[in-house]
Length: 148
Image (tube, rainbow, N blue to C red; front, side, top):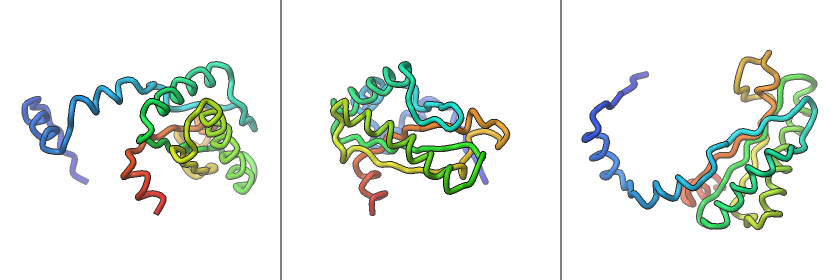
């Protein structure tokens, strides 16, 4: 794999403009909450108060920008059977989706994915880091392509 590192600000700016970058689009992203991962205790799928407060900020952003979609990725650690881990990861993603919809986010702005323990964030032994939900923001074009 080849990695190209650009350390020339002028070249980066020209490439950004050529790819369709606009300052207005960047300003929109600046209002989006920065925290995108939410961790859970063992065998839990309920959100704590801090998580709810951050997700309410995400809901505010999504209501302001109805063309933006969010994919909610549910994950679990590798304890137990994979069928159960898959189920638990879906419960976690659904809990986040329900909260966003309760806060006024349109259902069509939300995509759900439950990964079970198949995509660990850390080593398999770091169970706490792997029990999580991650948010991924998508443009409308990306969301439509993912839905088929």
